[in-house]
Image (cartoon, rainbow, N blue to C red; front, side, top):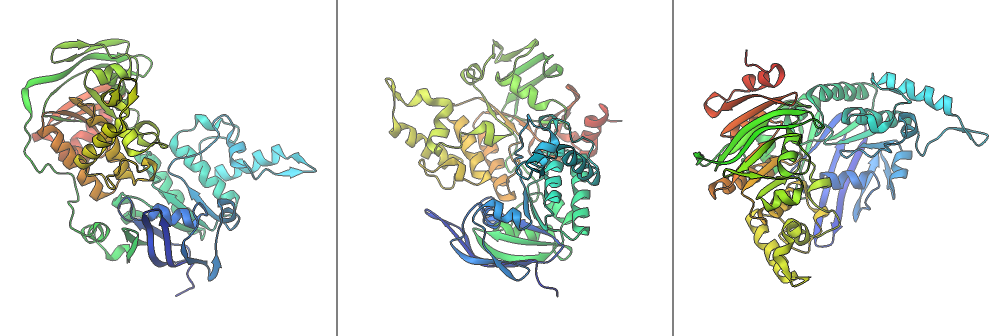
Length: 501
């Protein structure tokens, strides 16, 4: 066997009160696509952050092609040819594609920028990646998939020999994902070593050569992907058997004779949806499915009051609602757990207690002052309800794993005592065990009489959890399907063609 491209020996990383990496050792072969798997909080992202110079190691060593390396900041890793394609893409939207591509690495001659040379070089990299956009296009106008291509082009620019991908398909359509996989295979064929983090096991089995599993910061095993099946891989990740797909463990108690929310002919010229009508019943989980551009999220934001509508009405228990602002949505007993939790779900610089109290702050006031005792008591109680780990009111939310950060967002809205819970992609970017906990929380909510609208792009999740599924296409409702008629092919056909035929 050839010398490993990357060797991790006894990596240890301590944070105050937490060990994120605990004696982790494994090798990555040259030119392979190597998956890093584990639950949220297993240590995968910490490992990448150490490798890319974002975080210092507590102890242990890293070797590249047998040579010990230690990066004190990201530029040192970049100079060594190690690039990370981030899940949250950071570009300067006002700048052009070529300006973003060469940012910090501008080509100069006699002190002057070689603009035309950089534009020509950018065009060459974009052509190599078969990109449909041009060097002079504004970066802010690119879609998510195109922005990722720009990050990969930057990796080619610096002649990267190792590229890591952290949940790269979390915001991509199926077509964009297929394009990305083609590019990654091309990078591998060119001799580049790939580290790949994903919670989507389908991707791992389709794309990766080997997979290393971490659990609670410890190394568990490294598998050849062709020699392993899903149940064994999942059990290695979570330490126990977990259902592969979403399932309701308690029978539905939907009270179809008790409409809670009626949406009648809702439309928005600005956001491109029209004639949206449906009814949500007490104790129901109503799924919403559609492809990219179906406008599901736009409809949910309008119901909550975050976006304006041009026509239609909302009725809660037969009473007409006026939701022109999120504060009115909260007052009317509607909660929105957004798709992008990091930007819209919680404030990164606040503690768990502050984030959980954010939507219900009036409850903790004593005159003009906030009672921190009441606020912390609520955070502990809600944290216990959602099984938050750690259930510490003073813990900074930004340091939580993705699954636990999502629990903080859910706890925030449970604190409002909202009757209608809208969950937009509630399990996006979280591991299989955390997904199972989110599903159990949803069952608890409807068991206690709440009603849920669940927006998801994962059909197994919708089929497993929903009582009915509304399918949207191009800003309209294509169909509403009852549970006894759930079938992936039928739902996908509605989403693509607008008909089940």
